[in-house]
Structures are given as C-alpha cells and as structure tokens.
Image (cartoon, rainbow, N blue to C red; front, side, top):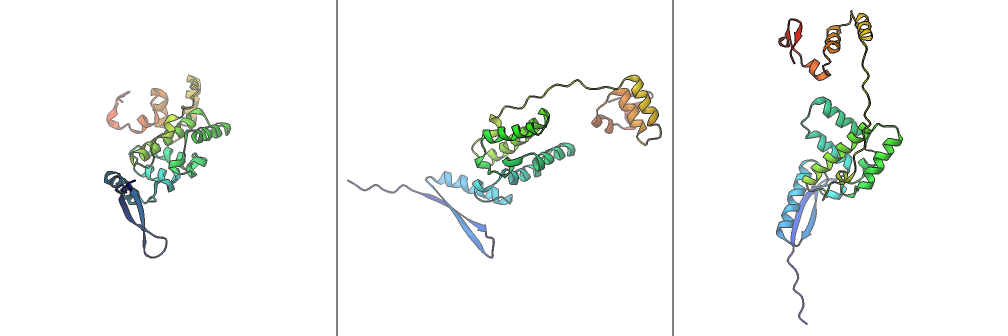
Length: 212
C-alpha cells in the first residue's frame, strides 16, 4: 500500500526569559497556520502581562492580579474586589486556571458557608470568580467559564434596622460637638446613602432644602 504523506504542520517558537542568564525557546506544533497564529497571539498577550507563556501554568490567584489591574470601577468597589481576591479564594486561588471546574467552586462556597460567611459575601466571591474567568476566556486562557455554571448562593432578606425618632434625637445630642455633626444630621433627616452624602456640595443646599 502507498505510504501516507505526512500532514503539514505549522510551528510557533517564542523566546522565553529563563531563570538564569540567556533565554530559552518554547515551541508548539499545530496542523494549520491559523491555529499557530492564534497561539502566538495568545502567548504574546500572556508574556506582555507578565504571565507564564503556557496557559496551564497560570493560577487563579496570579491571573486575578492581572484582572484587578485592569478594573475601571469606584475605589470602594476595587477595594472590595481586592479583599475578596486576597482573603476569600482559598484553594481555588492556588489552582491553575485551566484545571478549575464547577465542583471546585461549589466546594469553596460551601467551605465559606461553614465558616459563617453570609450569602451576600459568598455571592460576591462567586461574582468575582465569574468576572475573572470571563476575562480569562476572552484571553483564550480557558475554554469556558466554570463559575458561570455554579448557582449563586441565596441572599436572605433582612429587615433593615432604623433608629426611632427618640433614638435619633439622643444620638444628635451626644454628637453635638463632633466635627461630623452636620453630616449626621443630614443623614438622619434625609435618609441619603453614604455616597450621596459625600457628594453633596453647597450648591445642593437651598435654604432648608437639599437637592440631590
């Protein structure tokens, strides 16, 4: 029988910084030039961000730092996300991006529940993981978003606790000499949220009225 002709192969060879002096080369082989081109672009993106050339070596915690760096959100939101990445990712943070599966994330959320964390906190952890893997998917580091396949923890609605009129009066009496007395008085008198209060200027004040 006739010998089979070898299939054409396209290669990608990229110089990689080595631990010692000099550089080494990482190579990949693909059946099509298009597949090789996509791999080259993905490797170049990872190296430009200071990540390992091979996608399988990038951990969730490593990539999360890259995700945090590109965020365009309010400082308070960025601080919350950074706290979750630092303290809440547990064993999932140490796993390689390409190895994480939905059961791993469910186990993390179950562990946080046993530790007493609220449904709101556990949902925030899941939301952060979903955003991290969404970006990783766009960077072609993973083929899917495992966090998207995990049901969000239920948030138990709690009745907010409000001060009575008498409690509010006593609080203001006690805070008369406090530098933030005016802020407290406006907050109790209007019910504005913290961000709305801090955004107020004198232009918003019209006699006894506050325009928001």
